[in-house]
Amino acid sequence: MAKSKVETDPAFNAEVIAEPGGEHLNSCFSCGACSGICPVSQAIPEFDPRKIIHMIRMGLSERLLSSDLLWFCSGCRNCVFVCPQDVRFADIMGAVSKLAVKKGFVTHEQLVEKGKSAAVKRDLCVSCLTCVRVCPWEVPKIDDAGFATIDVAGCRACGICVSECPAQAITLNESEDERLIAACGL
Image (cartoon, rainbow, N blue to C red; front, top):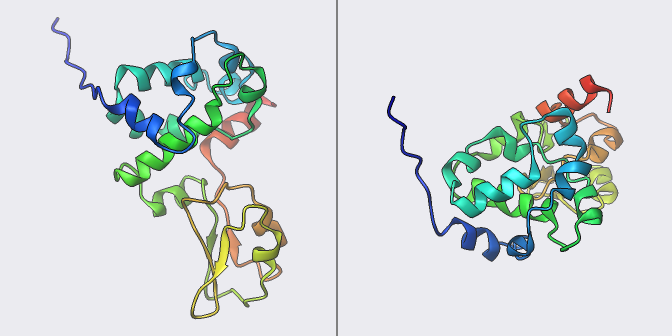
């Protein structure tokens, strides 16, 4: 049986480091503390922060950037608090996610569909500014036509704007990782 050749990108590690949030990647010495504390990896064994860092280092860019695993990081930052090297895996995942969007592995529409960004139903928006006021990251903005818009790349899918919108004009799909975590009772 012949093994298939895996395409590697030797520059991928440097690309991730160059992105904001990726600068601590090479500090990782693969101790596994991040994987041990990660609530997502407990519910979804395929999601393993240590393995994802290894994939970056191995240059498996296409495999990682096209994988749904990339979107499973909840951003809880538990990994940051236990890392003895201050690697900040959650920030690295943000950097890799931005690369996936930038390189066209995922579209803004797919992020909304995957539940990784909220979206505004323009026909329901009453321009009340509630979403603009309640978002801690200042993601919703009012466009030139007077309607709320959400920067998909900046949205953290926290759901605050969804729950606070009096017109119910903002939606957020349930993500696969949220569904799997809920099913495990974590």
